[in-house]
Image (cartoon, rainbow, N blue to C red; front, top):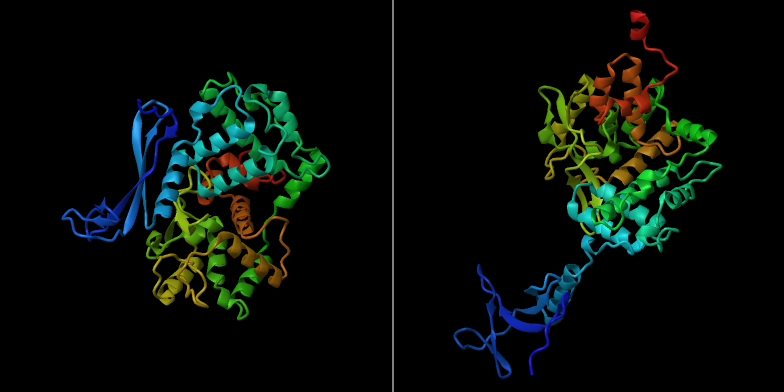
Length: 421
C-alpha cells in the first residue's frame, strides 16, 4: 500500500535522534543498538542532547525538513512544535474579502513586526491599540468587504467623549492602525479601496479641544527652572543623580529617551558639542532595557552645541564618573547593588523628575514631566527671535510646521516682522 501523501501545510511523523556534543564541532549523531546508543566507532555513548525532526509539506507543495534540538526529548519536541506553529502561521496571502477584521488585525501586526520599520515604542502603541480598541471593537467581527467609510467614522467617533474630548489621541492612533490594516488588504486584492482614507476625520468639540490644548501647552519660567535645578542638586536628592540630567535637558531641549541613550563617544567636550538622535532607551519584553537605533522622527540625527554651563558640568561628570561599562552619560544612580552601570528606564526616570518638580513647589501641567524642559527650550528660542528652521533642527523635528504648531504663538508678533513693515 502506498504511503499517504502529506497534505499541504501539514507535517509527517516526528522522529528523534540522540546527539553527543563534541568540543568545537557539530554534535555527533548516535546510533541506537538495542537498548544502548553507540558512536561512529561502535562504542557505547550517553546522549547529551536530542534532535526532533519531521518533514513538512509547505503550501507550495514542496517538502522540507524541519528540526530542532533540546537537552531532553521533551524540550526538542517543544522547540520543534513552536517552529512548526510559526512556519504555518497565516500569511498576508491569506487575506480575502471575507477575512474578519479581527484576523486582519493579527496579520497586519505580524507584517509590521517582520518589516522592522517602526521603533519598539511604536510597536507597543500599535499592539495596545489593537488589543484595547480594534480587536474587541464593533468592527472586529465584520468582514473586510463589509467595512466602509461610514462604519470607520462611527467607530472612531465612539472613542472620543463628546463632552470632555478625551480619547482624541486613541482615535488618532486607531485611525493610523486601521489605515495600515486596510492598505494591506488593498495590496492583497481583498478590497479595491481603503475605507479609512475615505472616512471623514473625527473632530472633538471646539471647547474640549481648546481645553485640552491649554492643558498641554506651557513652559517653565526662569524662577521655576532655578527652583527645580536647585532641588535636584540638594542633599535630599543627590543620591538620585538627576541634577546633571536636568541641566542637560534644560540646556538642549532633547527628548528624555535621547538623553538617557547618550554615550560618551558622541560627546565632544573639546568642541562643546554632542551628537543627538538615532538612539533611545526602550524596554523590550523578555529582554529588558536596551539602546535602540530609532528616534521619534525621521530627521532626528543632529549635532548640538552645548551651553558653556552644561559643557562644564559634563566635563566634571566625565572625570568623576569612573568606570562605566555601557559608556552612557546618564546611567542608573550609583547606589545600591547596581553601581550606576545599567540603563535608566524612561518611565521611571520621568516619575522621579515629576517628584523633583513637586518637591520644588512647581506645578506641572497635566500629562507633563521631563518634556516640559523641551517645551521651554522651543518656546524661549522662538521668543528670542531664533529662526524657526534653527529651532526645528535643535529639537529634531521633521518639519518646521511641527515646531510652529507646538511652540509659536499667533498672538505674539515677531519683532522681525515689525522691522520689515
